[in-house]
Image 1 (cartoon, rainbow, N blue to C red):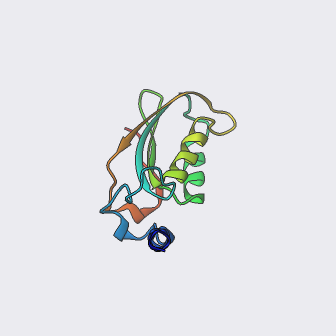
Image 2: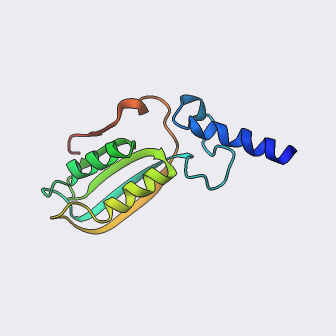
Length: 130
């Protein structure tokens, strides 16, 4: 009976996983929870500028509730920072590896970042080129 109670109380916080109260425990107390928030930085190389890549990224990220930004870099790559549930960020990364119709993605380099609690409610946006 004790085990069942623990399982029930564990399940309830997942319901409000987007609440700000979860920000102070990035791992959510579990090892591989698809609802745990993560933040990543991705660099996408290949033919990824002038093909609607930023628009593609913004529209897909907003659709699945991922927050962050995308921008073109002077070296021809596209840079992305994304934060959301592990499952949603993984989905966005898999889309980055494909890109929009005319893109030719060669490589997506992904590295983890610490979670950001401030300003993460701003949705997903395009930054100017740098």
